[in-house]
Length: 233
Image (cartoon, rainbow, N blue to C red; front, side):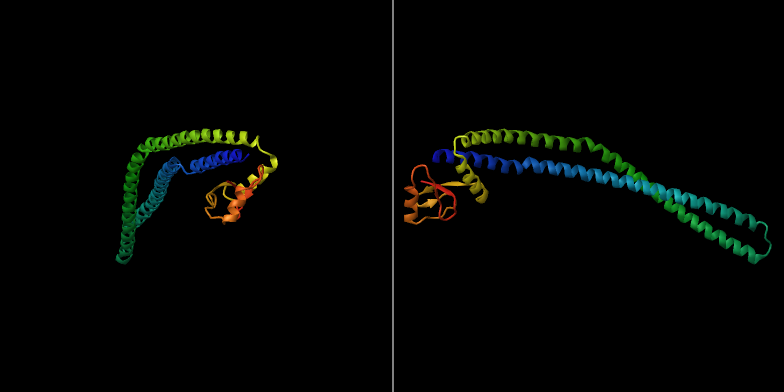
């Protein structure tokens, strides 16, 4: 029975180690990096498109304001042609000059917005050209992770099947004790006595404690007085 328990522990430990390895394979980090790169690429594209939309709205607003200024200037210019009083003419010319200055500012802003739009369009074209490589990197990383996980899952299935076969050969009461100790001690419920040391907690037993373990009646299992695991000589 002791040998069956040790085999069961070995099978369960192997399955635990495989699950631990599965959760930490480098392919998982590689996939996370590839997906993060894709997310950053998508975010960058969204930001550029949003800026183009913002610039389009700004240009439309400036064009509308420019049209309004042109109408005002035309009206003032018409008035200027009909006035005779110098002061009134001077006032109209001042207003027209202010409108011209504002119109020039709007033209400059519109030109700057158009130039920025053109620059962003070029960057978006280059940005779109990277899509295939970015998507391929994610697909390749996912495929690599799937392959590694499938291989590990197959090994876990073998170890689990072996453990289930061994459990079928052990008494239910002993399995309850085994499972409880596994939960208490990080998955290791049974250890061997090596010399006077428990190879589960790596602590020494007294000579009397070690002798007691060695002389445990057949069919029974001693507990390590240090860690509480089942201990076999």
